[in-house]
Length: 331
Image (cartoon, rainbow, N blue to C red; front, side, top):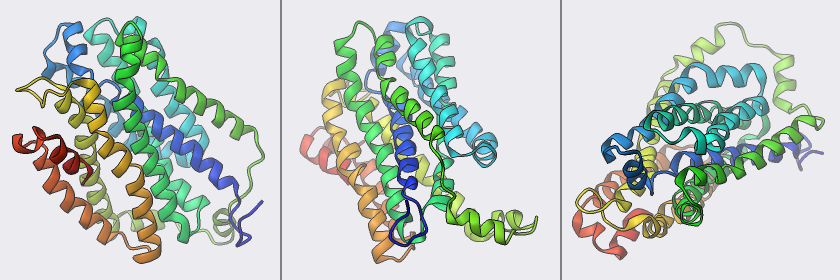
């Protein structure tokens, strides 16, 4: 079946759902330990500063794979196969955490493997947009996938402390929160078995193939380089906001704000649900409908808000007042 234009098949929404679920799972795996990181550090007998290595090693291995492997795998083996590999990297160490998570070294290497997951999963976004969605829907599609990232962040930072409280250990919590990943894995396997329609972009590529220099010219274009730099800076900001803020809010004073794992989850609603889920969808519509595909205005506003309010939440006057802190987190 196709959409109203008679060109793009409805199958594209199933691909989008598979990717969004994958983003949700990656963020759950990534951020579920941040609210309880002080407890993990105490249990493993290491300093909290040392325990933060569990965060950077996840990002480090993901970035290496993202740059060197993830995009190549997506181009060669397709979107669904790439999502499948990325999900396995995330959920297998989670399930095995009760056995491998008793030592600092075991957790470190488990997080290293889990970090490979975004390196495979995140590159598929560009392929999904370019292959399966018309230009007029790409802002909305991007917003929906971005909302998946935010929803996963919310489930990780808010839900994990409750799961941790309900089970015996944080290692068992890690195993239980992998359920969404297994559901997505089954969904992807089902999509692999369905007949896949040919998207219009592939039909056009078959009619007119670019020469061998096309990719190099596009990669070295000033707009591409600017886009890479802007994406790098935006990712840096978002990882600081999603990965480090929950630990800061949860940790005891003077290291952090002293709210504990449960209250920090409710405070992080302002980031993960209100701003994180609805923000990308609203901004996607603004890009499509108001700015006619231009992202400059949205990026500029985002960076301005980030500069002001990430600084604000580190200020005692702000983080000691829940109302001001909630407003700052939202903005």
